[in-house]
Length: 420
Ligand code: HEM
Ligand SMILES: *[C@@H]1O[C@H](CO)[C@@H](O)[C@H](O)[C@H]1NC(C)=O
Ligand SMILES: *[C@@H]1O[C@H](CO)[C@@H](O)[C@H](O)[C@H]1NC(C)=O
Image (cartoon, rainbow, N blue to C red; front, side, top):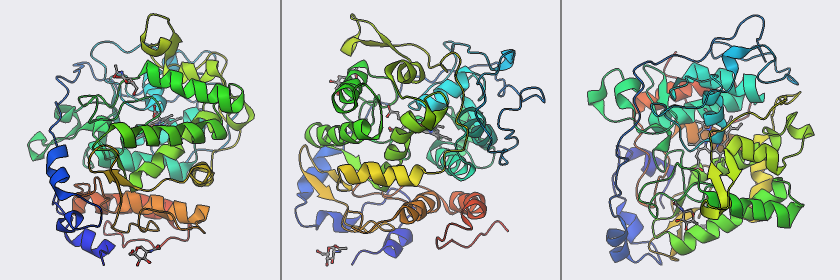
């Protein structure tokens, strides 16, 4: 029996798990063949003139979220507000970092995050609430997972794209901080519009017009042009199947449940007035930075992500991310695990939270997904069939300290908070 405690005991980094090779159906010779190194991104933009996010003024407080604290929860607010020039769109320059997340790229382009893409925990928690009226617990959780994936718990800094360790870390010598492009931490395979890491020479962060066109074709076919839950459930299923067929290193681990949450943002957060609005092509292409261009691959060219004109955030906070994750997943249930060679998929054999034998139990409830998210934020997590994320005890303690207060009434078994 391979229990979570085994995972935790041997969590000191990228240890190979000897039992993986012994699992039924795993050809262990493939394990050695498929782990080719991938080229690192050549260089990461460096902006010598780092400016923090534009501060919120009393005149334009938005949801009123400040300093990492919860805001008023009351939305229906125009973003950017008329007259708030500090949060007007400014295209990123060659020295600014952008990455795999359309929601954060948009936020940086409007100075809700540092325009150079080197942001902070606090900026992230505030911006998600103030722009999108995402609820406070999920705002904190995503910021924690983001810092874990590629940032620094001491400085609270994070690059929203490539490795900017010299600017995010206090002591760069202690190791590199890959930013949100870091693979199989938060960034994962089978994304909506980004390539899988291993089959694209490490380009898991740029917008891909062919994939955007594919996503649009699902919106057209399934939901009459709307990027709604049904369309995205079908498209996510298709992306998974594509990765099984084409990516010898495809990995769909526990962290991949986040991809369903991100997909729900298309119809819950991006439309004007959120859930009351329509996730149509004009809205979605503005946030993804997609412009129709017959000479571009797939017919879609990338431009900087931007909040559509005359756009209002949700009136009420988005509090049902876990319900949407579960509803979308259940339309096309998938096995959690990974490929050991193309089209040779193996279920994750180590249990993680409620995941056992690579599946969610039949009676999974939204509350169980919530606790799974807590566990993703507070544990080492399988990051391939044979490794776990390289989180240190200090990082996990920091995360527990951030997450326990917001999960205290969620009914999850909480880890002891060592920061108190
Ligand atoms: C601290 C907060 C956040 C962090 C750290 C974060 C990070 C990420 C990362 C690493 C990805 C890539 C996942 C993948 O491989 O597919 C991603 C995808 C995505 N994020 Fe975020 N995100 C955050 C908040 C948001 C918000 C507030 C929104 C929307 C309002 C958003 C919308 C999306 C969407 C739509 C995708 C899917 C993109 C695609 O697959 O093409 N994110 N995010
Ligand atoms: C975009 O995605 C398609 C489909 O996965 C792939 O064939 C193509 O190589 C990708 N384009 C780029 C520039 O990575
Ligand atoms: C997982 O697989 C093992 C071994 O095949 C089996 O004993 C166990 O009952 C399975 N668990 C679930 C929840 O299906």
